[in-house]
Image (tube, rainbow, N blue to C red):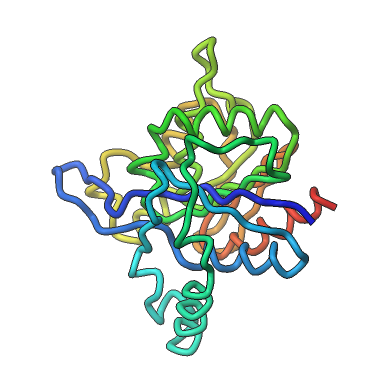
Length: 231
């Protein structure tokens, strides 16, 4: 089979409007579930982060209430510990898109801090979109799309149907009031056709080679849609 690139956050916090730093990183389920789906059919995963730092885990993502109970949380933690690729990422700056058949961005609030303003990631996203390779982006990771500014000043994802973590979910999660900005609002501002689903329920939007998922529950279905494009 082929290689799939996981582009992951290197940020362990999200800076709020008052300057405080909310501890975060990547969300476990959004990396583990797609990783298992891709590797189960033989694909190889390579992780990449800005600077090649080990992506920090949002420890909250291992809480029992987000994993169907203690047993579910233990399974996710064990699965995550077994993914050596996440512990040995390559530098995002060194990635050659030609080496990969698809690109996937797991979420968590981390991408709101670094990938949202990362020009290297932004160029990669523009190139993936143009290449026709499957591009999967889940939950808060669509923040990375904000950096995909083309030479003409327009965003590469303007006019695309897509989704991402909704304002309603951010409010229910308790962080909206302290945020500098909300993802749904910014996606609308760049000209994307944002598609909002029910809070916390799976919602996957496919437009051409772009596959987006709204929340953690959408990570598995998004990976399944990417696999359809890879076959």
